[in-house]
Image 1: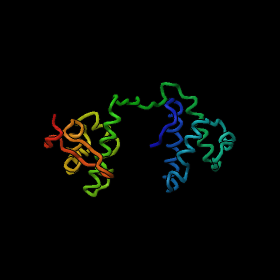
Image 2 (image 1 turned 90 degrees about the horizontal axis):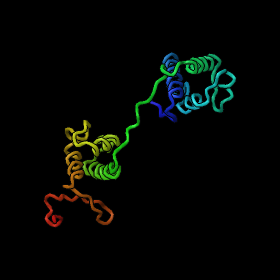
Image 3 (image 1 turned 45 degrees about the vertical axis):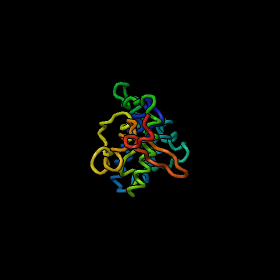
Image 4 (image 1 turned 135 degrees about the vertical axis):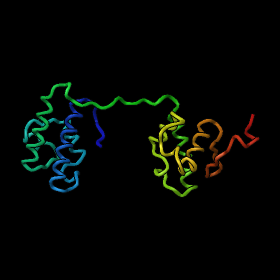
Length: 187
């Protein structure tokens, strides 16, 4: 699960090939992946595309044994020769509709309040991607809209989203206002 610097197919292929080599090497030696080669160095190698062991060794912070260096260079050269149609690509970037960002921010505040009230870690109730999904779709297939999470957060989140609930600052704390039951807030 590496974060890509570039969406260019050849770069993505290089990162995948080097990461696969690292995974095999880590399993063979029974050591953590990052002890074989750190994520940032995989990106560095993919960006520089060394065609020889010497070019690979010239990269800063790269120190590999001869066999590892040769394996990586072989993977790089193989991918550089691969036809375009054989290269991987990332799925298209999903753009969020206008207005979703501020709604997601409000949901984050409500999540923080709900987590504090129930004494449960925020990330156990909902993730950032859950909040984005909820902001876009009332029936999103997320944990925050099921079971105990729905009781402590999901119902309130839907009410906030549809204007039946509001958040208000009261000194140094945030209050939750139920607009359906508060006659002072009705027009």
